[in-house]
Length: 502
Ligand SMILES: [Zn+2]
Picture 1 (cartoon, rainbow, N blue to C red):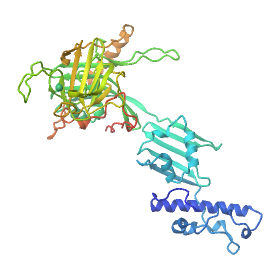
Picture 2 (picture 1 turned 45 degrees about the vertical axis):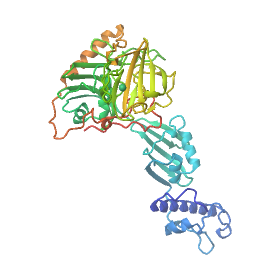
Picture 3 (picture 1 turned 135 degrees about the horizontal axis):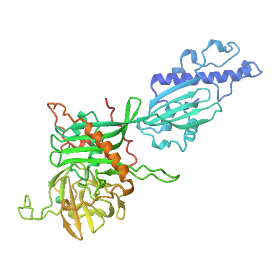
């Protein structure tokens, strides 16, 4: 008899248990088969396919003595009381290995192809097994008599738990498990001693919240240049809990940033509260200033998150080496190779190709005769091509040093009606304000949250002796991945929940 499943990967103990269970099961089946028959055991051997044999090397080597099946014969009639029966069920709990499919993984635990197929069918339309990732936890109960699953559970995320259960009708039925969660509004505030990132860490919050905060202020504050020690921030943010475990941040409801350099900024999340008719979609929420203006502008201040300006737009720049005057018709942002670059505004890709001095170049065509240029890219966003529509802040490529470039940086340029202009001088037009008919609702909401923000304290924590993890110098520390880029590759691992708060 051949092994029904590959055994090479199994640990010795697992192998013993598996083979033992299998042989025990076969023994039971063979025994029942024989005793159910009318003829005496000596003349009715088990059918060849089911007959346990002692020439199976696996059984010989691994099966414990008590479970080793022997062929019943006349001189030693099988006696059911003399041997313990195989356990009717086997429980397994494990995590998916990086290099295995779910079928291979389950097969390794003795779940045959038929049982795997049944499982996949039971979860059809509920969970797509192609979405499993290494490290996903699973557990199951296998009924040893027929090698069928009676229960299966898979966790692909804290809120993404799937089960399949075999009911009394013998049907395996799948479902997504409803994980009870509660959402609480957290009030967070801190003063910056070194950086926003460090202040957030001190407040025992995750770097993902830094990214969220930077995002909502992205149109008014420049987090490369503006932050100073002594600045402070306050945030009202939803936290989603399951028991005492923080699952994720929900909506950021309101935020305040007090800049030594630029003054106080506040933004509020607002989604109109409307009675929806069936089939009607809720109006999208957005971030607004206190007076109802959109917090969002047509152009981002910078087309990438973590960088510093290494060369400004300058019509009379002295070339650092050649010493002659040569205009620099854009802004250079020094950043590590691979730093994501975003389109500064919505538009249509005019070009995504190599062009001599520019290297790998993306040109985005915006409204009002404006073109934005992103040069020296190491590579383009996957699949990006001329004619594609892009949103503001959509990933277009990655910082590099292609073309005429001395080191990794983004050369960012803007043309208006064919001539280069200083991107810093772009008039920032805002998006649509709160619709007039919701102005009353908005005012009430803002008053409530403003009062909440006022109550948050930003007392500075004592500075520790070594805090050099500045947000502008150490981009990799706090980069939580391309921030909500529209085209994150689907193979990327599921986003990790923030580490639990104390
Ligand atoms: Zn440049």
